[in-house]
Image (tube, rainbow, N blue to C red; front, side, top):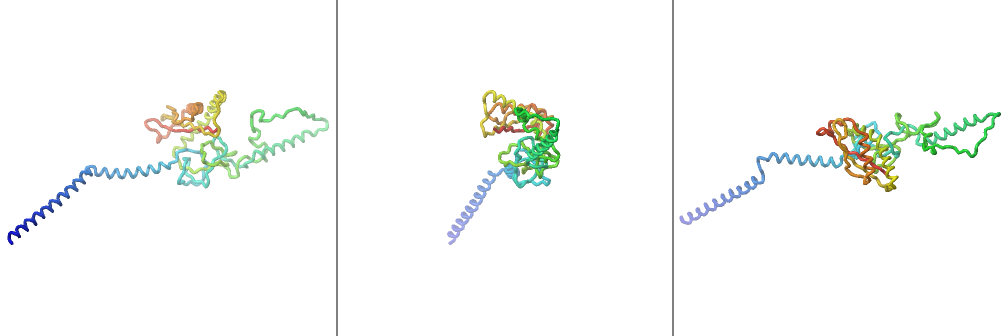
Length: 317
């Protein structure tokens, strides 16, 4: 029995040693795996990187919906930030229905008046002129001889369009405008922003997010509008003389990237994307070169003494 007990105790001791060594070896393997996968000296950096990754995702989502085009719109008295605005403007605002003024031209709001004020002004001026003519012909001693072959000269014949109807000729003639127009404005609303997806109407009303550099871009626009039409007209005449025509119902877009210094002087004008027609691209470049120099760019746009802006020119045939 003593031998069996000794044998049993010896086997039991060996088994315990085996289990203990197995546990220690297993723990060593797992700890070694952990240490090999994690560098404790940079453990804090990993936590920071995870936080940065979350921030990157948030910025990415906001950039995907960030409006890019700077536009002109009639302003509302109350400001409210829209959820999904595609445009930047002077202030943040929301409208029930987005519309763009149907008349193409430098932006302006509609004045107070009637939509067909020019027609009523024409009728009023015609009736008043007839009345004066009747009073002038009442003379018993003189006879007026009418020349049937004499042609009446129209303003259209002088290439002056409807210049005579630009303003009412009598005080009783209604002004051209809209019933809900602005007191400080005159005539009908105009807009020359390129927004094909916005329906045309009598006024320009858009959802916009306030852009802090709106004033800077607005001043550039004012200077460009003085030269864009003239430059485009010259290039169009060249195309016409050479027998070339623009395809109908096609928008020709020239996108420029302009670099200016901190004083607003133009350093470089590059074509970012071409319209496919050299004359139109040349007109866009010429307009910028003629319009410069521009106002001093805001400090937030300047990097290493320079500021870069992008501008698009659209020709609709």
